[in-house]
Structure formats: C-alpha cells, structure tokens
Amino acid sequence: MGTLERDGRFARQSHMHNTDMEQKPTSGIVQEQPQPDKVRVVRADEYREDYANSVQVNVSVWDFFLQFGRLTVGTGSEVTFSSFVGVYMSPQQAKALHLVLAQNVAQYESAFGKIRIDNPSPVPGDQRTIVQ
Image (cartoon, rainbow, N blue to C red; front, side, top):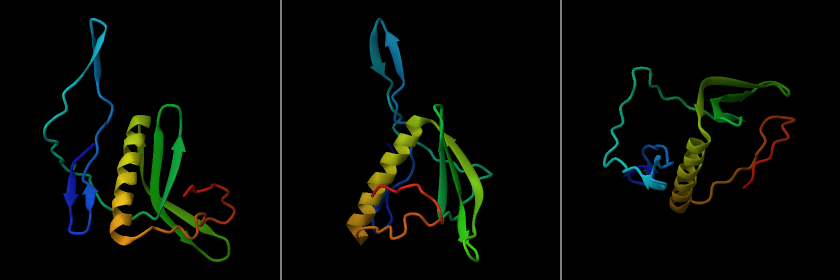
C-alpha cells in the first residue's frame, strides 16, 4: 500500500498507490507485475494544502468523486458548503483510500482513544446516515 512514517505519536500512511496488481496473461497463466522498491513523491507546482471539515462524495459506475470543502452554519437553518477541490478516483483507488484511512484511524484511536461522532448529520434536514 505505501510506507509508514513515524511522526512521534503514531504511524501514518505517507502515500498510497493503486493496490490492483497489473496482470498480463501469458499462455493462459496470470502473472503479477513486480512492485517498485521505492516510490518517489514529488509535489506538483499547483500542489497546496488546506483544511476541510466536510467531504461530499458522489459515486458512478466508473468513478468516485470527492469534493472537499468547509461547511459553515449561518443564521437560522442556513448552511454553506464552500468547496475548494474535487478529486476523481477509480473504485479501486477509493477502496485503497478506505483501507489506508481505516488503518490510520485505528492507529490514531489506539494512541489517543476512540473518536466520537456526536453529531453525524450537521446539515439540518440531511437524512444520510453515518455507520459507526
């Protein structure tokens, strides 16, 4: 999946790559392609970091779309979602992200205690459910 780095408190996944093994049929036999020994991470010129307190997820048969942004509650029942980046990924990459997040949440909870979600639906009228 990737390499783990220690930051003094817990291990975190430093990067992720496609977990699907590329397969080539050879005389009816499927062979795994060798994985690289090292993965070099290079930040593109347009790379940036930001804080998101909300992620909207849309799914199609072809891909997952994650839209990151900030949710702010105004007066009354007004809620604003200000998105700043959207990321498309394959279902396989979404599954790899799920596994990386699950591993890192487990490590975080092991180091700092269980993460509680007190208000799983911060948007008034939102009927989606968070499975805990």
